[in-house]
Structures are given as C-alpha cells and as structure tokens.
Image 1 (tube, rainbow, N blue to C red):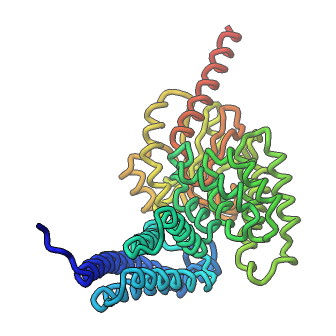
Image 2: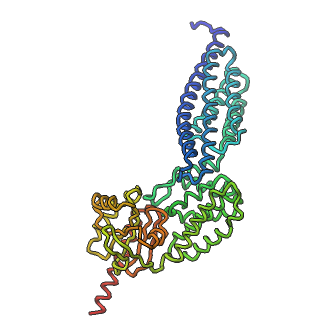
Image 3: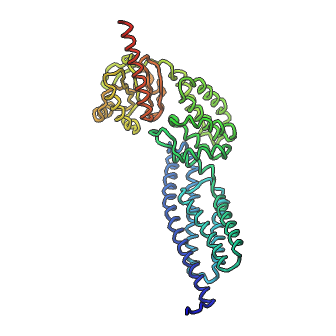
Length: 478
C-alpha cells in the first residue's frame, strides 16, 4: 500500500517542478543572450569603426552608418535586459517559496515587461531571427507554464484552462510582436538573401519577403533598402525584372522621399536592363527622377544620400545617349600594356567583349579565369576580348597578365593629353563589361560582375549570328 502524500509534500513537489523549470529557462536565456551579446558587440565595434573613419561604401552613406551604430547599441541593451532576466530566473529558482501559480505569473509579467519596455523605445531594428525566435519562444513557454500552474492549482475547469492558455499565448505573441518592426525585418531579409550575381533566380526568402513588403508595407518608411537590393551600386540582378511591378506599387503608395528615391532609381535601372526596346522608356524614368528629386528640395537629413543617387541617374542617362544598347560603339583608341597603338576598330568583324579590370579589383580578377575559358573555347571564331586596365603601374598589370594567362590585349586607361578611357566610357564601377557585335553595335552591358551563364549565352548567340552572316556573304559572292 502506497503511503499517503500529504498536502505539504504535494506542495513541495510542485515547487520543485517550478524551480527546475525556472532553472532550465534561466540557463537557456543566459546562454542565448550571451551569444547574442557577442554578435551585437562585434557589429557595434564594426559600425563604430566605420563611423570613425567615415567609410563603409556597402552601407551607402555616413548617415546610414550612424543609424546602424545606434541600432547596434539598442540591440545590446535588449540582450543585456534578457541576460538580466535569465539571472533573475535563476535567483527565483533558488529562493522561490510560494505557489507555482505566483511564480509563473511573476516570471511572465517580468518578461512581458521587458518586451514592452523595449517596444516603448520604438526601436526600428531587430536581433538575428534566431535570437528573436528564442525570445518569443521564452514568452510562449512561460505562458504555457502559467496555464499549467493554473491547472495544478485547480483554478479553472478543463475548457476554462484551454481558453486561458489560448488567451495568454495570443497575448505573449502580441507582446513580442510589438517589438518587431515588420517592414524593417522583411527589408533586412531581402538584403541578407539577395543572391550573388551567379544566380538566375531570387532566393526563396527574398521572394517571400518582397511579396509581403509590397502587399502590406508598400507605404512604410522602413523599406528603402528594398530598392537598394534591386540595383544601385551595380546592375540589377538578372531576375529583377519580375519585381518591376513591386517598385511601381511602392512609388504609387509611398510618400517618404528616401524610399521613393531608391525605388524610382531601381525602377529606371530595371527597365534599362530589360533590353534595347525599352532604352527610351528608361531614359524618361531617369529624367523624371532628376526632376522629382531636385537638389533644391533635398532635406538636410538626405544631403549625403541624394547626390549619390543623382550622380548614378545622370551617368546612366549619359550612357543611354552615347553608349546605349542598339547604338554604334563610339571609337576607342589608345595604347596597350606593351605601349603599342591600339584601336577598337582593329577588331571590326568580330564580337568584342570590352572588359574593364585592375589588379586591385577583386571581382575583376575573379572573372578572369572564366574569360580565359571563353577565349579558349571560341578560339578561331569571330570573337575577341579587349581589356581596359586601370592600374597605375604597368608592371603590376603585366605581371597579372602573365600569372593569369591573359592572352588578350588591354588598353591602358590613362591617355596622354586626353580623358581617361574610364571617363570617356563612363566606367564608374569595376568591372564593367560591354558586348559589341560584329557590326560594332553595343548589344549588352554589365555593371559589376555578370551572371556567367547569361554572359556565355549572349556571346554564343552573337558569335553564331556573325558566323552565319559571314557564311551567307560568302555564298552570295560566289
């Protein structure tokens, strides 16, 4: 016969369960908060260092760097609060001498207070999704514990417990959701999962976040970097055309100048990339951008941002008017790396890939092995690679040509008494590649590293066309 459990022993067992639960949650909270602190501290150091030297080109501007510096400090405060909460749970686990109901209610109230306090700071930032998920999971776990404690104490019937549990869960999720700036989170997802240039399809996370941004948050001031993802420092990714409608929707619904500026510029770049038939349309969008974002109307907070956007728009307009797709390539002459005279016209009758490069440009040098493969594969056919080298010291460029087995000739960027080739051809981003057909007409341009599959396909199509026209001409002459 089992000994009868007294009320005191039953109460002690419940307290032990509550203590174990508090210990587990406390230890996990401390571990995850410490890990998050490590990463946010690294970010804070990086952003503050960038702020000190005022250079972090990939972040866009000094103002953006400053914003991220402030955000990283807020994230540290958030994780410090969670760390303190974990320590408090361990203290409670050792000192608790009351009922499980009171314990779990107190813990839930404390954590909800932390979440709401952080929300009250109106932070437009988030920790990593893993850390954020853990914080929400802690709230949910405490909510479940609260419901379980109610059941232990017999405070509610079965249906009442289910209703109470559901209500607390919803409250926990809403409490955690107050801290979430959804548009900022979705935009960060787009920035994080913007694929490399080798990808012909957007990452699934980017695609999902883009749909949510357009459907629910097209009017938010926190989605500026969505436009940045679709083309600013380089050409839009090859799949950017499917997001033209998203950009137009943002321009229609959003009234925030910075968001509209980046979306407007991205739209123009996406249209420009769409092919020869839409070059005039792209030029019109660029002109409208320059008209809508007149420097006279620029607010002080955007004085460091809009000039960069205007410079890009003006450069693209100039490129469309003088080196647009479907236009004849302007004459180019100078000297090669061996000091011999060189002209673009020397390659007439061949498909020419004009590729800018320099030894200090990592993407340029990363592209060289593939260019070498293309040159080898198309040897003996109407195709040539012509480089434009921007190294100040010819010796470095010549050494790189020998080391990387670059068999094609390269123009020297500097020209005595004349503008540099980079200035004449608008080569502001390295690498920039122009693909010119056998008739001397520009057919494609890539600003930044191209998608290799697209590069090969476009070159092969133009080479085959050149060979076919040459064959037809030979037959007619006979």
